[in-house]
Length: 61
Image 1 (cartoon, rainbow, N blue to C red):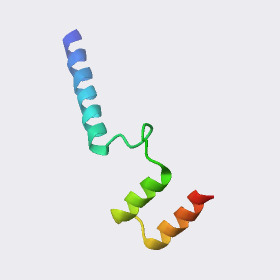
Image 2 (cartoon, rainbow, N blue to C red):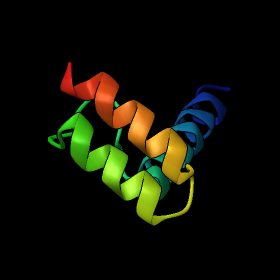
Image 3 (tube, one colour):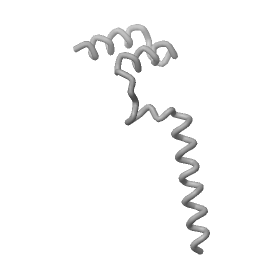
Image 4 (cartoon, one colour):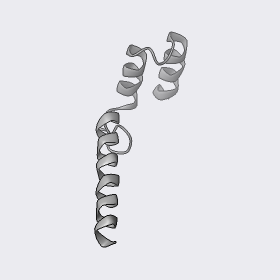
């Protein structure tokens, strides 16, 4: 029974590591500035020009 718990824990850790690699861990430990993130989102087509301009103004102050 103990070995089963160890195997399940290992699988869970493996899945978490794989998900972190896929997302790039861009959440809590990102060194990017908000403006860099905004520019990347615009470049990837995630946001429109209007939304980019609005968010840029918000970030600027």
